[in-house]
Image (cartoon, rainbow, N blue to C red):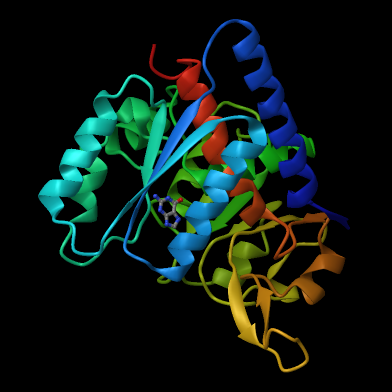
Length: 293
Ligand code: GUN
């Protein structure tokens, strides 16, 4: 078994992005500029957004964090989005989710110009993904693709089972794995909460991608010997033996499954670390006008 090491791959991708920023600047362009909009003071959102901003600095991007109080109105936030859409000095921006209950997240997502939607959440970008057109792929699916690429995982003609059908992970990664690309060209099955014979279907997977949101659900008897296992889950489990009082686990029971797998992503240290790289890659693509020209 070999680990699909998100730490190693993300470090490599960050270095590649930093190198591209140097080249862009040498050609007289300004550094790519990402803006993050944060509403309220949710602890997890603060942590994510701070990490996104910090990583912009690491690769030489410009970044701006726009903070608004919890009581900002939907109209005011839509105005912020319009301003960012029109600002030629901003390549991409994200509005960190979740938003307060009085704001319709769908309305905000729809208001973001698809050309600046580096989260890849806008229906236009999801539609382009479905059609196989150049687009911003959302963070987790793009992170998975980058890891599979870096480890030269052969997906062509393989059985790929995706467990989970969310709009931002399960569905897009399943679509990507069907495309005539590398990675891609797999025969894909999507499983979800109503799937019968989940265990048997998972056991047919040469590539098993798990994004179901249930701690350590996938056990060794659900995995084919030699399978490539990608675990998207991340959960805190109480653990008195840890100073923090918890440990992190994925959707896969790692200790059981790892010896059976050919490759597996650990949690932490797997897919999660790739998501910020994805956001930066999308922002770089925007700066280089690679998606919409
Ligand atoms: N909240 C949790 N993950 C994300 C993400 O990738 N983008 C945005 N905008 N909000 C999030």
